[in-house]
Amino acid sequence: MNGRTATITRNTSETNVSVILNLDGTGVSNIQTGVQFLDHMLALFAKHGIFDLDVSCKGDLGVDAHHSVEDIGICLGLALEKALGDKKGIVRFAHSYFPMDETLVRVAVDLSGRPFLVYNLRVERERVGELDSDLIEEFWKAVITHARLNLHIELLYGRNTHHIFESVFKAAGRALELATRMDPRIQGIPSTKGVL
Image 1 (spheres, one colour):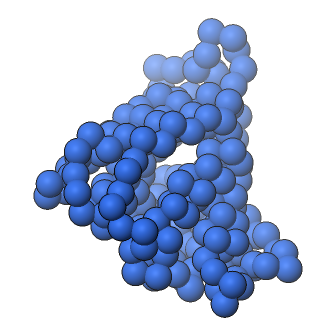
Image 2: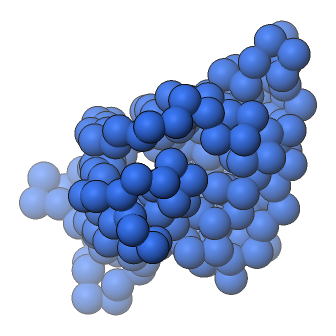
């Protein structure tokens, strides 16, 4: 890989995580987190974000998936921040609506340098596969904190929990793909302040 890429590793007493990200990829992924539903979501994120993404995690899943999910989010956030570099010439803002059957989700992003998450999702099921539903919010909190971005996730309507989370990851991938694009018309940092 070359261009806007990053490799992040994080080793703690709870997890060993590695993330390799290429923002200018083709949507190829290799995801092995030990949590199958999260593997599925991250593969969708990469495919619809057109990112190349490798994620591996060996975590204390005997406790539960919380440490793994959060640390993967931390590493993905750090990788996004590193791969973006100085952010010169990027579009910066984007949004995506993603329908899946009865579900419609909207995700909006600003690569502002100011972490903030708005998470307006309500799901009926406490678990999807082996993953606690509330860990999806923890994942995105970790991503936005370490990528230093503003992310709004909103369920407009829908019932099926799997469909809702799938729409979120697809829409987030697409919104980030649009926001991280380089635009030759944008000179320097995309802010009137001159910094992000």
